[in-house]
Length: 173
Image 1 (tube, rainbow, N blue to C red):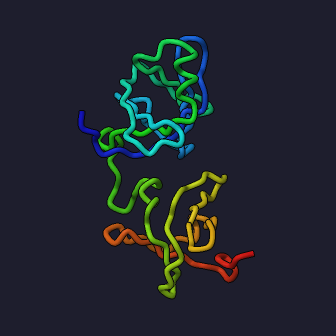
Image 2 (image 1 turned 60 degrees about the horizontal axis):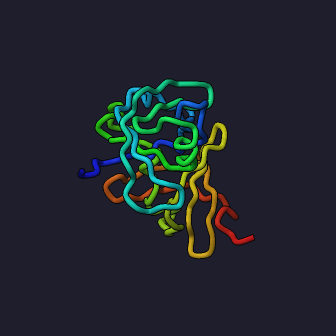
């Protein structure tokens, strides 16, 4: 089976109950619509291989994320084996975005430059941190946490972010 265009939406936090349901913790706490996904693609923690497709039997939004019942996962042990797996969905099943919107996960892999044009690194991850999410920007020396509020422009075609870089943000401490 060919893997469709996928978007990472969260991680399996833990098993829930005895019947094999899992708690999916979304990367975006404000996410909506994952309960309508027909399938989740799960990539085991630490793996870089192709994810495995699981049909969604039932999903519902709860306080901590989504409770999801996956076909073929019928007990707590099978669900617990999925803990830490990254959850991905087929982009075709996601809500339509306006022209000025994009999914935060699409920032991963983009080059980062400051307003003077100096290359600063590459986005390797996004971390939910209250009201202002953080970009993990990998530089030659280390990973720097950059608040998304410092993004000034996004060049989608060129896969590049321009940020405001306050003095000291990229200095090695």
